[in-house]
Amino acid sequence: MLTVHRSERGDVLLDALAEVLAVPGADPFVPDLIAVPARGVERWIIQGLASRLGISANIDFPTPAALVADAVGAASGIAPDDDPWRGERLVWLVLTAIDAMAFEPAGEVLARHLGVSRPGGWAEQPGHRPRRRYPTAELIAGLLRSYGANRPGMLAEWAAGNDTDGLGAELSEDLRWQAELFRRVRDLAGVPSPAERLAAACARLRDEPGLVGLPGRLSVYGPTRLPSDQVAVLSALAAGREVHLWLPHPSPALWSALSDGAAPAGPVPAPVPRTAAPP
Image (cartoon, rainbow, N blue to C red; front, side, top):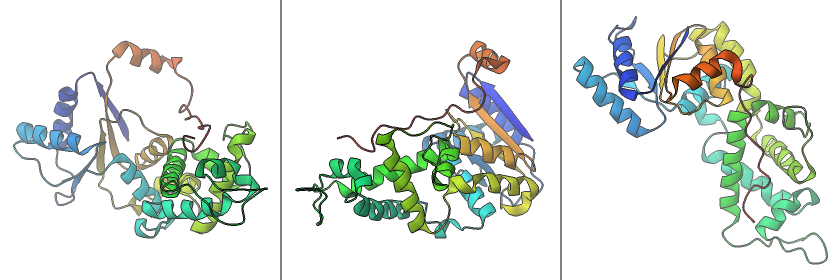
């Protein structure tokens, strides 16, 4: 069951959270789980729960992104430590891909940004601007993670060889290098990206709640936004668990207007940036 709690004040939400946690779980030795966006929020919740309940202990505080990544990994059979799409491993895969692609016609945008020397045509020898390769790889890796979180359907389309924005429109010519780079990174990784695994993982999480080692009750406190992958995974987890969303929202009137159907259907997609890095 998915329960949404909303208030204009964080202390009011914390009062209600304390009431929920005051009821012991089925197994008192299993930690409660509260996903938080920042460590400062974690400390504030710990202090607030301690003042309300007398003690604040046996609680895990992952980030919402880590919670979702672990759930998708468990449902897809890829352990986090073995997933090439996580952490620094993805940066090195992107670096390998851009080193090759920058010397090909498909990588003209990358070549221009990296300062690849191309006298008389495409260069035969590497010639990058100093200190640009790794920051560029980091930026593109973050971009791919953002696409996976906000527009998983687009990455699934790219993996299938379709250079679209995931909503049916073709990518413009100056953006198609991103789809090609993603496919090269995917080949280097050797496994589908988390975005491609998302739909099947959510189906398994609904059908097999015990697949992930999560408590029967969990919370996500204080998110300012929920990307598409988090919405999908939390909805799937709620099919077999008690999931609470604690949302600070400043305007009851706006909330009512959105609840009445004024908001666009489904998550609003993040835009595809025009370039991977500033020129």
